[in-house]
Amino acid sequence: MGKIIGIDLGTTNSCVAVMEGDKPRVIENSEGGRTTPSIVAYAEEGEVLVGQPAKRQAVTNPKNTLFAIKRLIGRKF
Amino acid sequence: MSKKNRENKDTVEQEQPQAGAEQAAEAEPKALEAPDIEALEKELNEAEAKATEHWEHVLRLQAELENTRRRAERDVQGAHKYALEKFVNELLPVKDSLEMGEAAAQVEDADLEKVREGIELTLKMMSDVMSKFGVAEVNPVGQPFNPDLHQAMSMQDVPDARPNTVVAVYQKGYQLNDRLVRPAMVVVASANSGAHVPPEGDNGGNIDEMA
Image (tube, rainbow over all chains, first blue to last red; front, side, top):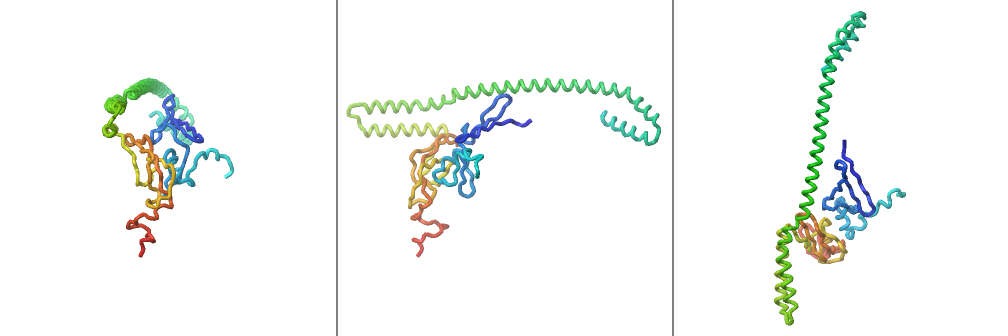
């Protein structure tokens, strides 16, 4: 049987946990954080940044940094 | 093994009607039935015994897994509580120095030069303790902006710097064993910068430099 994961896709932060037996365990991201900012950025040379690094460069790349896009889900494009 | 016997029996039964000897067909299955039932029963008992054995094995493994997990939790909690012990031990001389410095500064006609020296030495002690435990400083003046380590506070037009490099550091960042603890707060040169950057070999050619 495959693993069961739960994803909390929040407007500002997201969190993911996996079921280990009967207990959920939150998975840390590459920086050790248990939640990740819901921000994605498209940097030069096609590099895609997600989470804290994307948040940190928002000032330098405002046109290609997206946040709170969950508010746009379901609306007309 | 018995499956193959059954398949052979089926093909044998199919062939018999073709030959037209139906009685022979009835007689053959009857002759094979009795030993088959016994063999099948024996196999069933063996299979059930094996299944129970496997089931018990699984239960034992589950219990072991649960125990291992609890042990690991206990270890992690213990590690959390006492992980800082060595670090605290090394920090104590730094605190002692700061207290001595404070006491020296409270004196009426305190010698500012001595206090300054003391602060420098205490800062050096602190930096030594931190690097001993794998804490590295992130002070990226002049380096290209790296969102993994730096936090951009603002952008500035700086003629002396290439675009997207760090021109000022408001606050140093720190890493602990390659994991970022605090990003460095920096000011980044905007895209309009770089008008007076001395060209390197592969630079597009600064008009001011072209003869």
